[in-house]
Amino acid sequence: MKIVLVGYMASGKSSVGKILAEKLRVDFIDLDAYIELKEELSIPDIFVEKGEIYFRLKETEYLKELLNLTDNFVLSVGGGTPCYANNIKLITEKSQLFYLRASINTLYNRLKRQRKSRPMIANLKLEDLKEFIAKHLFERVVYYEQAEFTINTDEKIINEIVEEIKELI
Figure 1 (cartoon, one colour):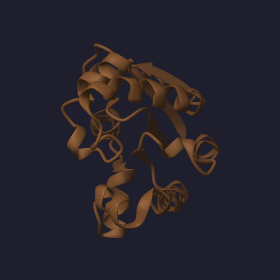
Figure 2 (cartoon, helix red, strand yellow):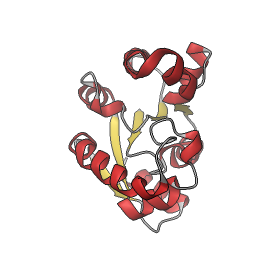
Figure 3 (cartoon, rainbow, N blue to C red):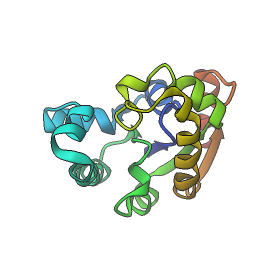
Figure 4 (cartoon, one colour):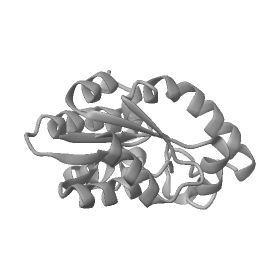
């Protein structure tokens, strides 16, 4: 069984994915980490040196590579992954898809502390962050909501989210 976690950045995909994979006794793969390993560059460096279009092409290439494996795993993908190159169709065909939904306020509170490590928001002023999240979420939610399951993550600890997913699979 392949489980893919989607959602906006800072929705908890990697944190939930690691623990879920451990409980299910399968591998956890973070798509961004996989891309960094394959490209031998950090995601911010890929964006700076090669641009977002290059990144999105490689993201789709490596997503296909992983989803075509026979192994079982939990895969956390970047917030934009489902929104490009018909990736959402590929994901829904080849995995059980979970959308980790978080409110704009929850995302804002998490991201305001993580801005420098996130290429998409690294250069945003703090006062512009909430509007950026709201706009981006509005554009992306149509992809996220194609998931088989939606898990509300607001005010839940990671283990609660993991148990909720386990009950659904």
